[in-house]
Image 1 (cartoon, rainbow, N blue to C red):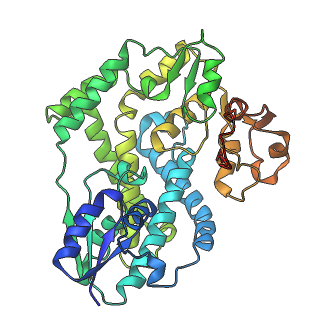
Image 2: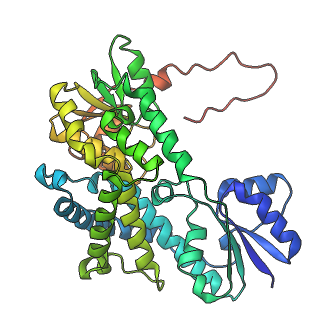
Amino acid sequence: MGRLIIVSAPKDIPEALAAQGTEDGDLLCFCCRAKARLDAAGLASLFPDDLIALPDFNKLGLENLERTRLLCALLDETLKAAVPFLGRHDLAVAMPAFFSLKVFLDCALSSAIVLRDIAASGRPMTAFSAAGSWEDTLGGRRPLVPLLLDEVFALTGSISIIHHRHGLSLSRSIKTAFRRLHGLSRACVGDAIVLEDAHDVPLVRGLFPGSRWCPAERLLAGWECLGDDLRQACGLASASTRLRADMHSAILEALRGPRGSQILAAPVPGLGEFLSRAVAGYLADGLSPILPHAEAIRDRLTRHPPRLLLTAHCRLGIREAFLLTLARSENIPVVCYQEGGGMGYLRWPLFALDAEWSDYLLTYGPAVGHSPLCQGHARLISTGSLRLERLRPPRRPPGNRLSLYVV
């Protein structure tokens, strides 16, 4: 049997085909979009279930619900002790980021189990590792499988990792600084904060053209942050770099301790340590640019309190989770508008986060409000969907063609 060449993203396809041309091997896809492109091109490739019996992903996901709750509780205790601002105002930021941490644990544990079982066959593997931060990884912008192969399975001796060239951090820092400058003249809080501007939310904004809507990222990008960006662009130490090191160290110590080790106990050797470093890096990467200026952000909300925070959902990353929990601490109502038609019908536990972390949940219809899957802190209000109401089918085309709308 030849080498397995891992395709974890569509951008891996050219290199994977080149590698396949130089050695006898099979393309193994861990990405549906990449598999679809290969199939469309008539190129043979495998999915993991062509090689092994897959684990029960639903069972693993349900088990990870409690694991993630315990993890978030430990992280919030650690952060409140390590970061004076969070402790002083009793702000929990990890629990509102439940979604991103839960999805990461699901992906990391299931992928590691699959890779362990494939590696047991003895076939060597080649993968392509992309540059990026832990925030990129947990945000889904950086493939996880090559990292697992590189950092958890590399000691097997049959793993080959081809690393892409790293981008210049100088360029990234300068781009961040210019993005801040672009929005500074309009950095006032306004009438409402928009957290996740998707699905029906843009249409809600369109109903109030005279209102001032402040994007969440603009609120987090004030003058105070700009100095840190420029210092980092010049390679100098800044408040955020020092805070990142302190947070990373505190979180890693907690996760390596008895309580953290029990929460992140994993069925693959070395995976627990990988999870600890990933979670510590994610929180430190996401929060360190914000927290040195958190008092200034809070002061803006206090001096010019918006009427509400509007979001398409409460399944958030760590930066968005910080702003949501800060807004709630200032008694700013959080209004969530139902995202898609699955809520109340699909048995997906993470829909419950929308009702748990908002004060008002606008739903597509009254049936959603009666569903046991959507009960939580929020008051549910049936409003219908602006997006679906504006969707009008075009005049039926000639012949027997059928137009299908997926909403």
